Image 1 (cartoon, rainbow, N blue to C red):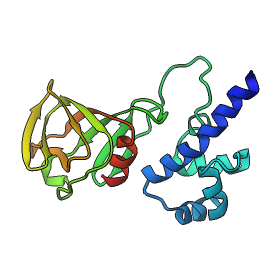
Image 2: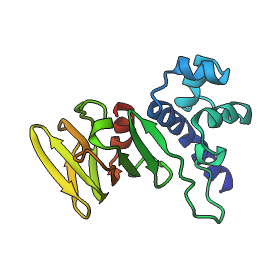
Image 3: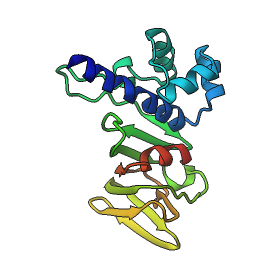
Image 4: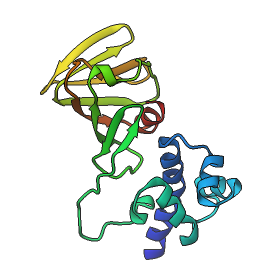
Length: 192
């Protein structure tokens, strides 16, 4: 029974490695240069064609800036706390609120004041997104329809429709909780 459980954990490592690499916007070549692993080895690891060794996982965990047990989604043994490791992408800060297990992924997203935001870029990708405004005010544009949401308001939408989210205020940051459906989190982080 234990071998089956261990095998299941090992089978999920490849897709997790790919998701972390893509979330950081790295190519296999970029990652190979930073870890000393070959592109071929990285590709085979991500496709679960080979099981990773400790010597392969340690440099990957270092590059991704996450604990080894989080990298492989090792079964939890007690402490339920999530170790928050913010990721900054194009002026936004994403704080993961859970471990990415390939289904729903929750983040606290911090939008700087309008003056410091990069130019609006519409995105579309498979999945759904749910968001709840914690503080400030955000502008949500779906296709050509703009909506402003204040603290305490929520929205849900199909991310296949071109969309953009940004701060609606010039002087204070806005904070939201965002939940990305299957495919949504990985694609949204890569495109932000």
